[in-house]
Image (cartoon, rainbow, N blue to C red; front, side):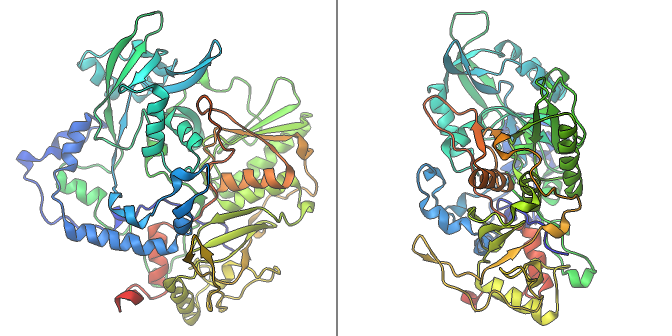
Length: 576
């Protein structure tokens, strides 16, 4: 079976390498007991539980060493050293800042999510007008805390914000965009991440509270607003408490917290697939924003759901509608994750329904689409452009498995693998062991030569390596190849475009990552598709996409690959 997708992930290895806790806090003084079993707790109590664990330099060094070696598999490392305008905020020496990496199981939630909106021709920051409807969905476990301290958060809904923590509200938003909102390269897109916005979570509509109202951090216990409440002309200063939402596995005390959330186990580390007679996991090309993106999203009250009926193919991550003009179809593609074959069926069903209803133009909403299966992005492009379009050359981007420089080719990518020493040893070992793509991500039969011929599993495409320089750093690659998606397309792709491609447009808030970014870029560069981006702040542009597609394996997949290749105990060359 060809490799249909690969997984993009932030570095989550830290939580997976820690050994079992060797000393527990006495239960009588254990601050974790106080917060155990509670969905919402004051941030100070959550922080006290965190601080119950003594600092362990050996663990820190083990984690950072493993993370540093995993970086050998990440393409973007050297590109981040000198990002061009307007992406300078992404310029960072990743290895130099590894000490700042941390893992958390709590997310703060503020009952006053902010929005940016234009009123009477003036754009400003406001507490979401419908905050009561949304925040109430968190339940009484959340809202009763504010009742218990006599804080009336409901009256703040719709208030005009004058200052946040003593700063102009947009200046404070910039601070959050610079220091909290990550992943997206463009500052304007990071600004959109600060504010609350709609999205698909699972297969349902939801509301993302944003990085100001829902940060993955419990060090901040409150936020101070200068604001003017609705139906008032008087400014007042209000300090709004955060409440921390627990997102991890159940625990009763510090020892069980560590065991359930920090210690390595069979579900966090890889396995030798030869020994367990297993198959490797399908992976995806999506952005994993730790727990942030999902944790601070809540459902939508019924009055905010689309009032027009959905057409066929709206059961999964795609929600499709026909606007009242009866000529415009809307596909809200909330993700490229989920049911791989169901996504294809939903695309075909929706477009068939559009055509039968006489729809002649299509609007694709990619708001807060974090990516997913790369091949599904290719499938949607192929379906809209028609199979007769052929090879969509020119689209250049950088993605990652081991190392990719990719140029689209039919439904795959012309690519090169990052030829770090361990990757070369993995390929060689898999050839020696006679492994193939049923177990591995690296074996040659995951790919095809650039002429379209399948690469044999026993062909070494990574040794010898080819020279490549980026930002004055040597970063050798394999020979060029392409991976393929088309064999996994079960739904037939039409020969010709179902709509004239000049009648297809894309809208989003810029939070369109990985597969989403690749799809939208391909539509723009090959078909001139118009892309409209909303949000941002006054006087600042927002780029039409926020991140070049990137694909990386999760720690468990890398660990599985190494173990399956029989290299788990291999010393790194520099350590030999």
